[in-house]
Length: 462
Image (cartoon, rainbow, N blue to C red):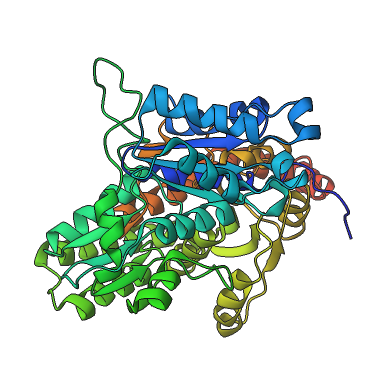
């Protein structure tokens, strides 16, 4: 068994937490840790979303590490309020703050009391980098935000829609679908604008957008919650919190990515709200079916590696299976056994074998990719070494995408998004085949094991 990870298949836990807070109206995040942690996360997030990303830091240094970082954190909170004037503050811990045992909940509560900030909301989330992946950090922060803001409220006709770490374009598409159906909803967290803002002058330190705080407060009175997360396992989620504390019925569905998953999502919303699925969405479904028919003849030779956030991998495996691309390696940097539990029955039905990796790094993924003769990879830019070292082309999907522009605009959900995602997979397989066909034939018949045979045949013909 490997004792260390080399080039891990995940980002650190507080980075995922930042996304959740960016999905709340007028929210600002401060990391209780070193400047280096904040710089590392700002860099990754800014490169993926192609947006300036402000994340504050308590600048924990050697002195704070020895004597405690309470003073640093309180000074940092002073600066955040002075510069940004936020409505909501998220405090995320880092490895350093957790290792020295900082009681961040107590510090934040004491700070608000000392300053008389009774109207300012804040949530502290324990997110040590060594405690999990960015996926776990994302879900944990979502849970803590709802726990901090949701209050008992009168019942209303809205449904809650809670989404995992998907692209801003995907969030916009889910909102478009719900609007077409005429559904009243609160989507959380909504960073479709805060992390993909339109060009405005002058520059806004706090981008507009995000789920309104008043809407989060009243999520407790919703008709139901549709949470597009199946892989959380025993980890507390925002949807489970609303059900437990306020009795809001929870419906858990996969991300609406793929034909079957999108059908499940729409039918779940229809069952809860009584709203019919409009004809326009039916036409989009028909166009996806047409795209699947068009591309199936190319996809049947695909042997894919899928890696990344468990929830995204689960949905992407579904798309591959629907379209004839067989997944041979399924990997996540999260130590998540739920993913294999959900997928294994489908592989058993097909009587096919795949390799599952949890807590994976790219050394392990690369070894298995070669062993299982994969010819396409689907995941983040971190998998580019599969192309460089093994010649396996990569379809960029998930987070982070830092060697291409437009990561925030990649649309993959709904019928339209699935068709676009499928096109990206099919075209990558086609490009790889067409670019390498002549070389493989040459090496097989003139430079390979058959060289002597081919030579003899040519001499006989002469």
